[in-house]
Image (cartoon, rainbow, N blue to C red; front, side):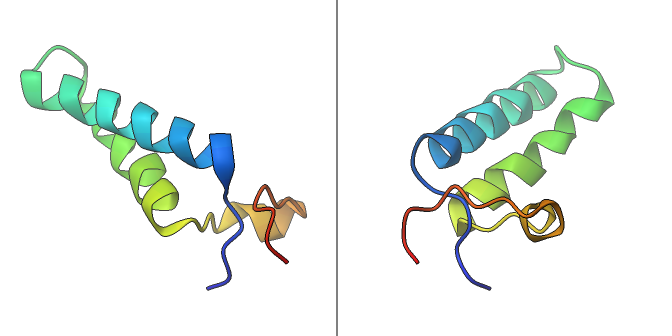
Length: 62
């Protein structure tokens, strides 16, 4: 897996994931808030499987 998520994109994914998971744990959000695991993992591992399909790359490293 080559890194394709970087910088601000990575930080936003991690924050959004943590917020959604926090809502799910607190019971405030609907069950779909567990989807926060996806952005959290893509931010932590700096890899989004959809970016190559869309031809995107936000990581500054080549």
